[in-house]
Length: 95
Image (cartoon, rainbow, N blue to C red; front, side, top):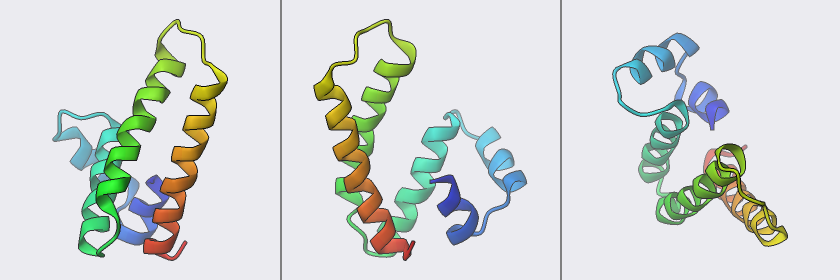
């Protein structure tokens, strides 16, 4: 998503840092919101992306920050969500 913000939206690293600093959100959330706005503007499937990215975030938090076992199903779910989101992003942003 950072690639999209840098290349498609055309923000610089400094612009990203400055705008992100003005928000209460983390970097992931900031980038997600920027991409969602562009998906909406370009008529992309932003609702599916928004739902799936939320599910992916839950799985990422579980794997990165919680002391929980990651099951094969969790891994498969993450891969499916990432694949679907990549397809949406590639088709809308011609990546």
